[in-house]
Image (cartoon, rainbow, N blue to C red):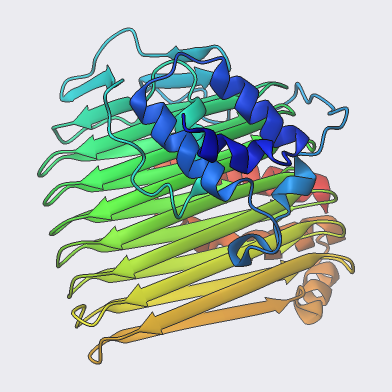
Length: 408
């Protein structure tokens, strides 16, 4: 790659940036990797002076420390009968059999990551992806069973770049599981939905307390498509799940829901940017959080409605419970609207459990911890309501229930 691009990092690289340079130089280079790394090098690691990262100090999180490795991290969807694409630091393990209507390629000649400028950590993942430069999963039918993408990181760095392409009229449920025992992982996913295609994207994050995880996604919606996303996270030293979505043609619909449960020393950041470039499109976003002492939540959501995007219907809501003194949540919901015939709304609340409701439940013999868990579970349930697969929804609700009973 160009000396100028490398010098952005080499001039005064942090230990993490030096590690990224060393990893890149050890890979078999190709034009796509080089362009992606140049895009990352131009920006460097995000820091708190960057507006979109002011509540997630990635530079500090990646400072070298003796990380504790958590071997108890589990895959809650292990029993789901589905083909699995598993990424580890050693590369990709692809399914042995190809389901009807699905094909995949390890695409060395894929174009450079299109959103590298907006997603520098996505560009890094694309540049350093282990195994295939880009795994392209092409879906050309209505799938009756889910597909699974697992990022299974141990104490070492792990990177992946996945493109999911749905052809016209196709539909699929994609279950992403992001596991990390204590290292650093950065993954970028690109979802492209052709006319009339539908995707249910379910995201589960679980990690050791010293892990750092970045999950970046770039989503393109065309006429009559529907993208339904639900994410559940329990955080890590730093966990960021970022989604950038563009309504490119009319009559597209997006649902971006999330829930996070955080206890001491755990951080979760949900960031999204939705651009309405075409009219008659709908976006709905519900994010729910519950945070204990020492936990830190961050929410950043922005809807941009272009002048030509008339008849846009877009709403976002972020609601959190501060379960103890010392819990921290920062939020920044935004609307930027240039069209004049739209329905757009945003809201943000933070509060505590209802003391009267707790008293009522205690009076009827319900133990305090159980009462708190029941109220909190009821509060976050809305975030899971749009998952169409009953089994997947039940699994996440049960995981949340177990976390609450253990942590409250």
